[in-house]
Image 1 (cartoon, helix red, strand yellow):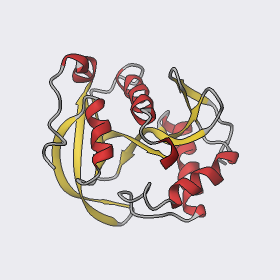
Image 2 (cartoon, helix red, strand yellow):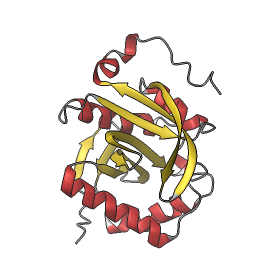
Image 3 (cartoon, helix red, strand yellow):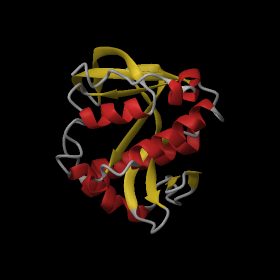
Length: 193
């Protein structure tokens, strides 16, 4: 049985990263139905599919301490979307950091702030050596977030997610590179496109 308690896992100056609550589900469904938000994520989802992802995230957190958790703005409790760590079937030996925010909250640095907190957790408390992030090559917004996180182009490959095959660009960051990212030269990941 899924716990919908909204337990806060991590905080940042502006955000609370927490498990999903049931009152998040309609907002998450609206986000997942927005064609612009899911343009590079396989297209719009039904409310039932969206609810299933939220349930899976809460269950994964309960089982493994990771998951694509809800992102809430601390100042007013607004639900912004999700961000967190999880495993991709295509890369079972890696942990991926991912994010998905409602369009109204794009361009405000929330994805970078939330993902930074998850990477600090991954390299600190979890002791991971490396974290990846995967997107479609034309997804310049996600590539820009990866760049701000200190991630670098690792490789490109055709992968399968939820029975859908697509060409993906995979970025990675090691614990050492993440710690040194402030002094690293700028990523050329956007110049590749």
